[in-house]
Length: 139
Image 1 (tube, rainbow, N blue to C red):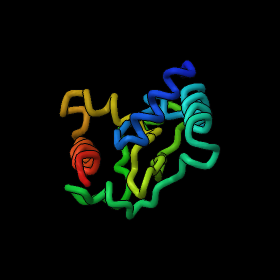
Image 2 (image 1 turned 180 degrees about the horizontal axis):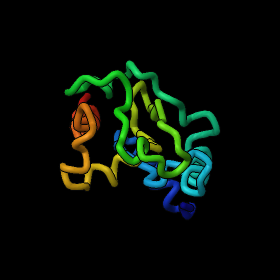
Image 3 (image 1 turned 90 degrees about the vertical axis):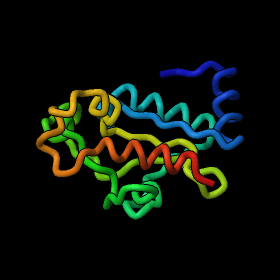
């Protein structure tokens, strides 16, 4: 992905103005083209060290449903992308709040699947979408 200079300015203004962006890498390959290009764009806008791993006890994991960190996806467990289960999410915080939440876990594709595709998961990770929305709408 690549932003134009105007898109970078608009993205920065939106985020620093209190907006929330959830970005999910559907290939979930930490060395893939999307991951590298997205992280490079965030570094251009917010600085090289702005996108950081968030701890598994971050409030986003308990804003509604309780999780011990980012829930796994069946896509990870089936070995797509880099064949890793990513045990963290990354974020850019502004004034102590996550404003850009970045995932390599492929939640987006998993959440749009039929519920039967998640039948092997102990906990339906779609609940984490509720947490993200709850957190984003919080103070």
